[in-house]
Image 1 (cartoon, rainbow, N blue to C red):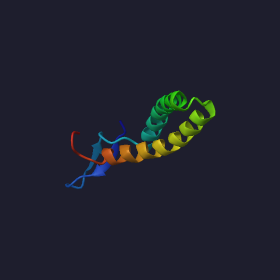
Image 2: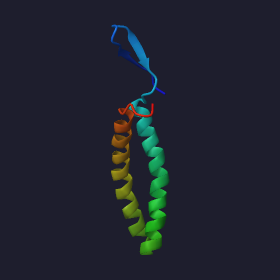
Image 3: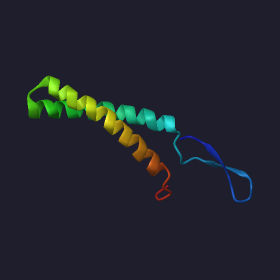
Image 4: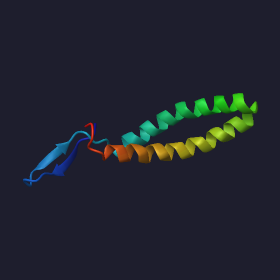
Length: 83
């Protein structure tokens, strides 16, 4: 976990050990998308029967879901509930 220094109510700096740094979210997004995209390519191939179509669908899905995951992760990181 990243350690971010925040200025507390008393003026002293405190460490926020519950936040992830954006780079960690990016790396997690990439690794998850590798797994998810392979799944999409396999399913697309089984449905379409065309390898080229399956890879096309996988390529579009790779980019869009990586961006969605990154912003979803950052949003959840800002929510205090459950920390």
